[in-house]
Length: 402
Image 1 (cartoon, rainbow, N blue to C red):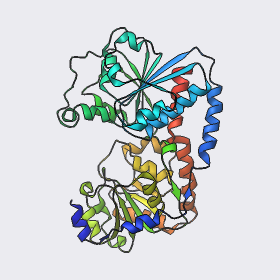
Image 2 (image 1 turned 120 degrees about the horizontal axis):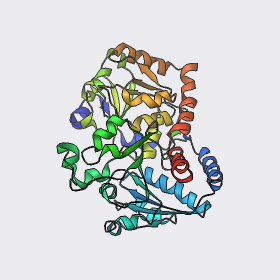
Image 3 (image 1 turned 180 degrees about the vertical axis):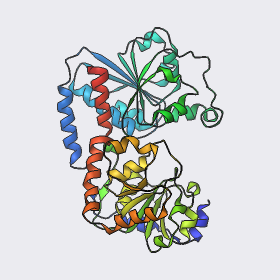
Image 4 (image 1 turned 90 degrees about the vertical axis):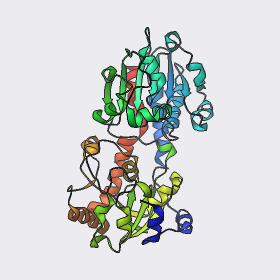
C-alpha cells in the first residue's frame, strides 16, 4: 500500500496538530514512581550477599536505547552499592548510549575488536557472562573448550547483530554463518518469547539443546527511558498501533463511521488501512520521538488490534497500550498466553467476529465503572510485570546470589 494513496483518501495529517497537542499539560504517569523504585532497589541491592567478589561481563548485541541502558543503569547501581561487584561491557554497535554512555556510569567498556581476539582463558577471568541478544561472539564462546564462566543469555526478542552479520541467512536461507563452530557450552536462557518462536528464529545458527530456558511473561519496558502520559481530554476514539499480524480491513464497517482514529506505523505495511481510510477519519502519525508518540497515544480513548493468524511473538505496542492505561481491544492468541495468565486486563473479542470487535470498541468508548478500572489495573500490571528491573533482579537472585 502506498502512503500517498492514503493521503488522497479521507485521511487528515497536520504537523501543527502534532506540535500543539504535544505541548498540552499531560500527566507523566510514572514520574513519581521512578525515584521510589530506585530507592527501593538501592536498599535491596545493599542487602544482597554476602558473597565473594564477582566480575560480570555484558556482551550486548542489541541496538535499543531503552533496554541496554536500563540494564547498565541497574548493574552500575549494583556495583556502586556493593563493592564485591565489578561490571564490564562490550557492545557491537557504535551508539553513544551503548558505548560512552555506559562508560559514564563507571562501567569499564571493552572494545569489540579486543574481545574478538579472546579465547577461553580470557573469558574465564569473568565469573558471569551475560549475552544481551544472540551474537557471533556468543556462538564462538559456546564452542570453546575449557570455558569455566557461567553463561547467561537474555533474549528481548531482538536479533540486531544476527541480521547485521548476515541478513540473507536470517531472513531467507537459514544457513548458519558459522558452520565450523561445534557448540558445546550450555547457557541459562531468559526469554520473553514463546519457546516455539525463539527456537525457530535462532536454530539455524545455535544448538537449541544447549539452552536451559526460563521465561518471563512479556517483553519488558525500560521505564527510565520511556514516557507514558494521562490526558483529561480525548481527541481520538481509537488508536491503531503498528502493523504486525493486523488486518485493518476488519474495521471496515458502518460502525466505524464518525469515529476519529489515530494510526502509528508504516502505512506501506498496514494491511487493509487504505480500505479503512476511505470511510474513516484517520490521523496518520509519521515516525516520531517516543515522548511525542506517548503524548499522542494519551489523547486516544482506546487501542484496537484486529489480529490475523495466531502470532507467537510479543509486541512492544501492546506494552505501550497497557503502560498508558488504555483499554485494549484484541483477540486471544498464543502470544498473549503468559501475559493473560499474569492477569493483564484486556477487552478480548471473539476471533473472526466483526460484531464483537465493535461491541468491545463501543464498550471502551462508552466508559463506566468497568472501563474506568482498566486504567489503574493496567498501570499496576505494568509496574509489577513489565519493568525490566524485575527481570534483572531475578537474574541477580538466581545467577549471582544463588
